[in-house]
Length: 508
Ligand code: NAP
Image 1 (cartoon, rainbow, N blue to C red):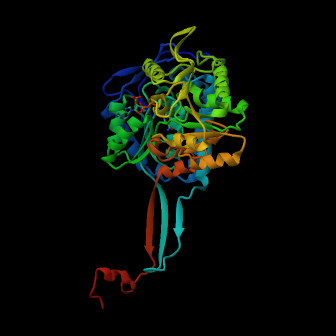
Image 2: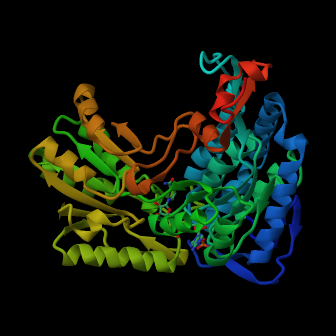
Image 3: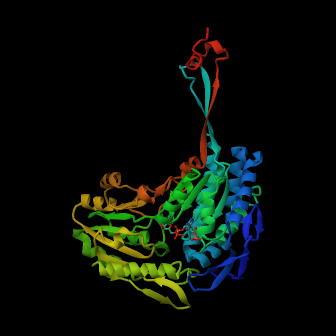
């Protein structure tokens, strides 16, 4: 694939318009595959956040949007899906040149997942239970009671750089489906597709419903997390920043969803079909150069097949082709930045120092035609113990830690011995054995004989310090509503309202 790169300047997207940042500053977006400048983007400020929140508040106050019938809202979600499809090639190109994701993955997965997400929620909205009627209570007297699900108001989304357009969609789609308005702050490495997505979506929603303020986490992110008119914050990113956002959001008691990091365990049982499990384990860890939160970074392997598994994984890993993400033959693209590359390489050094055995990879790779890119060879460590740094901390790069076990109970105990709980997996020929293990694994999603299989109709989110709340599926619609109980008394006479005597003692 070739992408026309005319270096463009992107202002902020507020109230359906492109608007310059009040400070008139910009930051560079650079292609991680070759170091070339891709775009200059407005560096927003606290005042810009105020402007975006004002626009989102005004849009929320319009009955036209907030009170829209589910049928009309569903049509809008389907229209957005259609627009994403029409602009798919551009979105894939923009995302590839800024995130380093391969066009093979972006074109055949991410963009289609986005289309399916808007369609799925468009379908769910039609039969969503916006109102429930409760049975009349026997005590203290007859009444009519409803439970209503209502939109929350102005929502803020703060997103990471690894799958920018898909993760932004996980927040935009349910927010809009439930009648909220949204202000998004994309990661500074990868703001382009979120800006373009907002522009596309604004063609079918009123001005102010979707807004994007680009800029640093410190300035724009913190302004959103503390803004008194932002009622919900949905954050995806590292556990460290998630903790900080949670504390910032506590001042104004915001409804908070956090999708954070992981150190996901993958347990290979002795009876696993290795022709499936070996490529599956590598698919689980090396897709997008290991920069996926749900990557299976710790592989637990039983004594009996330990050496065989290591040999097989090494052979397969060494066949992976590193290259330009725009090339369809590329299996793995670059990591996002020089800083991230250095961080991954320092984890690799730490692994060696702490006594893990380097099986393959472990070094930076120079790719022809992409000499200024940040590429790291797929790296496998064997003889890792669960207390080593490479088994405990999220590396967010192409590094697999293999941990040996004798009894399945030990593997499960070590799998759960982590602060994280995002994903997990079991490889076995016997699903009954798998279910026993799955029951014990403390993770928000568990795959049996597979990896990365997220569905738009199923919830996704973490146990423990991998997060709070769920995205996707019907659960995500609940997460963008608040619940109101409405009571109508059916007792019109004051004298029959026995409960008034709780205050008035002298009624005759
Ligand atoms: P990050 O450093 O936590 O940044 C995420 C977002 O937070 C970015 O938009 C960043 O802005 C912003 N930010 C940074 N500091 C902030 C602050 N003080 N206040 C408010 N916002 C702030 O994460 P990342 O490096 O982009 O992404 C990788 C992480 O995301 C990994 O830990 C990965 O596991 C996690 N992740 C989780 C999921 C999930 O669904 N659970 C999915 C994908 C990724 P700037 O870009 O301007 O710094």
